[in-house]
Image (cartoon, rainbow, N blue to C red; front, side):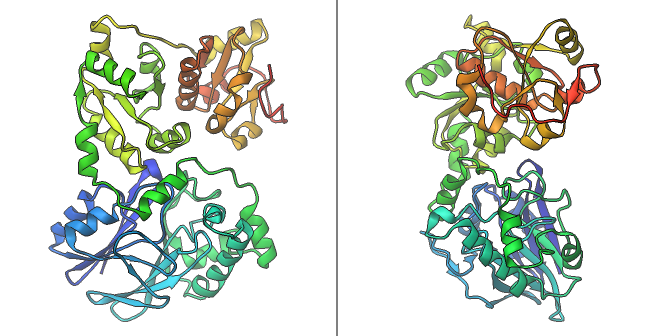
Length: 470
């Protein structure tokens, strides 16, 4: 028996390859099928099933493509209602894979179709559970994402989740290994560990949700502090329930190299958003006016999802040379299929054509400290709530990047806005968005709060006003 976790850090997502006696299953595959096909081919194994733990909200699954290419049936647990052919398993149903078995455990709560798969070894002993978004390491799946799909409230779903955990998962042996669909960084939970697997026994001792004394306490703890999910989540769910275009088709369109003339024409006629995926400190020195910077070398896909609410919005790309395929693939993972192409030759070709280039002022933390000591500055902290509350620049306003569109009218168009995050990635996203909307007095603080903390700028941990004011 072979178990491999195929972990994708930029999405904090774990897919799984299980093999026994020449047969294999894939659990929760990403959209690109090549890694799974190549893995099975290396072992000479046949993929027998494609298992889905639920309809995913934070990425577009590769179940359809993988099923088409292998003839393996797609399996969901009870209550699933896809528009394509799939095997809807019953609670307790057993799937045989080589010399091992996989038992379907219906575990509603995160969603009503959520299912955990229990793997038993060659001797019939429980070995591992693949919990999807039902149980994470250090957390459980948030119960608010599926409430709009019916009449259930998040408290109703949390109650279902409590029953699933206590009746289906916690009675299993302590040495059973827990393999979740996500780790730290995913928006599908709020307290996930950086570890990507653990024993069930250890989770019973350390996971706050599993230690809750009763149902009421559990419901309160898992629903407390939930932030609104990214806008693209329900769109990804809808895609995963329907007929998803092949990634090959998406890449064929997105990988079109456009001259500056063609690029400009498409931008004007198709109402596209220009997405520049270069690094922040490269982007600042020259970019196409009104383009948005979200660097590929960061939490790229989740931030695209947060900043571009409609997955169908037409996009044009500016990338580092050779990164076009990677960018198109990572966009497709979260459903952004409407890419019209990329700027061939990059920003250098744009400059050479004589077209306008914009810039953003970015200063070092040391320069920021000098200006801060010399006069009162308008400082905008775009980190998450917890980061800001832990410690921030004295007097800084807080406008979390994920919700910055709600604060645009409050930014000053007269005095400079000094924008920073923790390390410089998110602040350039914010600065580029503000620039695109006509705020030309934005100054980025390179290195973010991490660099500022090494200067003598006064800092505090008390709560300043939570939103920007004029």
